[in-house]
Length: 440
Ligand code: 4AD
Ligand code: MG
Image (tube, rainbow, N blue to C red):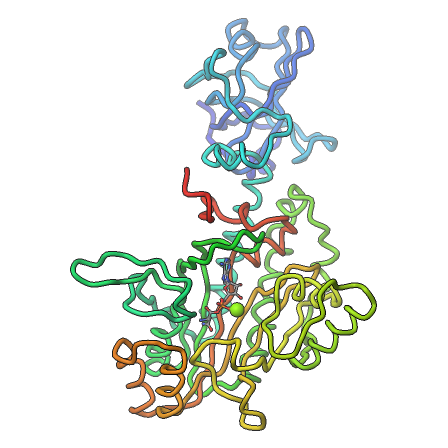
């Protein structure tokens, strides 16, 4: 058998006989000439099978072959400028490992399908080139985020997933039976990496997090992956610089390494090429003004009142006003989590920042400076009706060498959604978990 290669690497074997192992993606037949399209997970390539040039059993194996049958193909690589990957394969041999039955064909044909049908067949849908490209971009974003922190002296520390208490509000917790105790799936690793930050200085976590709100928006998953840095002695200013550095690093990496995938997805990359630092920074007060002006002009239906949290339509409007992500800082403390440090100039505000992606994608990062004072933190825990007992260890961090410190969380799926310009976060993760989706 000629040497095995992948479709992605096939350009290195021009003029040579190679073997690829994959699946039949599509087949065009025109009399004595067959044009099978093969995919192997790394890409797709068109093969050419002329009846006159191959043994009859090879021609017969390909003729009428069903979509997604598994195949091992031998052929000679030929450069072809018109071909999508720049090459075609002159097929000389085909071994069919498993032929998909004619009477039970692959359910996802090349015609259009409804989203519900595709979600129900997500285990197969991931095979289509567009979905595979999105998953490659996702992997690149994750790698880039990890490289960014690894290269800057951060230590990866993994927080627990089973936790005894809430981090982001008690209304959105998934309860779990933990022997004789009540536990919850984590909403964020933050509280735990505040502890490791006091041990290691600069840390980050990367893991799955869970939110139980019954939200049906296109930005919400019940299970999503978050990368969270936490830094001892860092202020809100430091945090904003880190956030814009991370985002530009990730975007640049995708443009460098995932351009063909972005093309497959149909992403207008010129918009991503405009992403550079510094990002505009506006205060919550300024954001409110922007929203009220938009309402006065008729661009927004509801009049936004100072004091509320920004809703999806508000974020969409603000982020559509900028070509790069925009950082909105200093929200009213009332609409934010219990652990945020108040602004010393205006204690009704929290030293926090949300980063909103452009093109209407909304919040991709949320973070803050953390309350350093023991007394204030106890007060906030009570105000938020949280059980002080469960936070005893967290309060210890304010008793033994408390320092100003800050961190944020970046939702991987929101970033994938924006970088790939998707309509919904459900396509950003192999198996999305949503209000009405637990299968497959
Ligand atoms: O703004 P959030 O809730 O912040 C926290 O959890 C902080 N404890 C993070 C920290 O400071 N270490 O969530 C952070 C990010 C959001 O900006 C968003 O990108 C993403 O996580 N996110 C979601 N992504 C998908 N589905 C959901 N339901 C999400 N909720 C938050
Ligand atoms: Mg948030």
